[in-house]
Image (tube, rainbow, N blue to C red):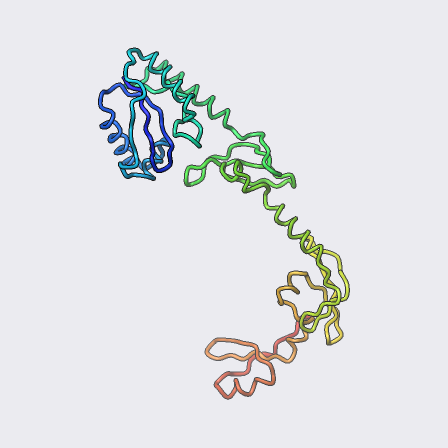
Length: 284
């Protein structure tokens, strides 16, 4: 019986395992074949074999070949995994601490013991109760279409959001989205628009906030009217007057297509087959 070491020469990572046969090279070829044909799921080692399928990148080495009993085999495997730190993702592909492997079917008692240990392992890995930024994990929420575990998280602002494990633990998501909104509000809060000109509009003073807490500005139009406009609407150029710029426009149409045209350009359109439509009513 062997304790073996499989090495990936591309990444430098390795895997410690046990084998009761007598041909390690054939055993490695069999593992790589199984990894190629079993595309769904699998261990870290199988995932790596699918990512690096070239056999020249892999080698197998006997660490011990003089073991006589199963108990010694399991104990030696655990010792090598611990010594080589192959459970740590930085160094190796082992998932378990060793000694869990076996050949042949499990008895009902062994199966029950294995399932209990597996449930305890995943309970320890549960994120429920943990906090990531402004998010506190409330409960597990099933899996997405790719099989990734989802978590129901409550944000400090009171909202709930569903997030996968990786973005949570990696720190790429820290709120329900309110952090982005707060950052935007802080950015706009520093902006003073008074005196600035946008088309026909001159900003006179701040006019409070709307229901979405967006800043509003009282603007004086060159026609003499006052209008209240949001910061973003001014900055993007979507508001350039109180609405008076739309006065003096005509709806004209051709083949079912309608456009608005200024009076000074109306003649050129009418001579090209466009028909006069309704007068555009200025919004109050």
